[in-house]
Length: 127
Length: 130
Image (cartoon, rainbow over all chains, first blue to last red; front, side):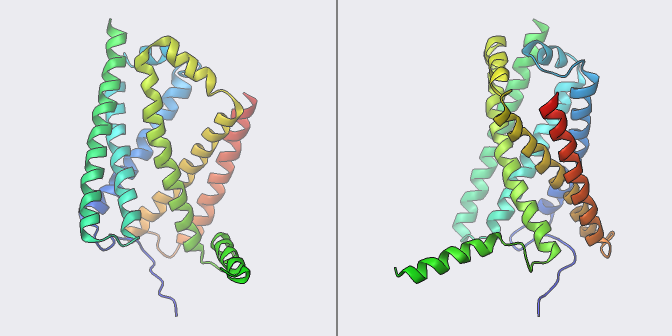
């Protein structure tokens, strides 16, 4: 007899808030991706297909803010998701601790790198 | 290491890819996980290659010229298809997690799969004919 679990929820080793954050960031990603897509392909004339287009696009003040929010949501969602996949492989306690630290570092490094890149593009537009 | 054991090992591995006799929910879960891994790979690849923007116009426009080849466009189509499925299925999982539409979740899955396939087809046609 197979147990059927009709709904999903936090798995063992996954904190409720981490699980909740995964859902909330997922929802925000869908919304931001939709806006990002419509703006990039329909509002920006002919799409953002050159360096000059991208620099001009980032001169709109809301764009860098939106992209930074998008970056944080996507990176968090990806890393929390990857961690929950690893939880299914039943890692030992020390392995999980190492993964927690590693993923936190990767997350922080990715966001710093992304914000730096966005700031470079914005500065090219204002120069 | 008899030939027989080897053979059964291979068929066991193939069994892993055999969708027959599995729950719809299991298929939804497997697809969710495969697309998750693909999208995560793409995310970090995307962040790395966008670093070309910092190198200036020549580097970035040269990079864009490279990714116009059909193999990269096909890769982008896979990202679109994975994104569509993962996003739509995520809405379903999110809803059912909070006890919403639990009895209708199979029906929702068939609908979202249809939308994802149709959407990917439309994108594919647009991407390869534009």
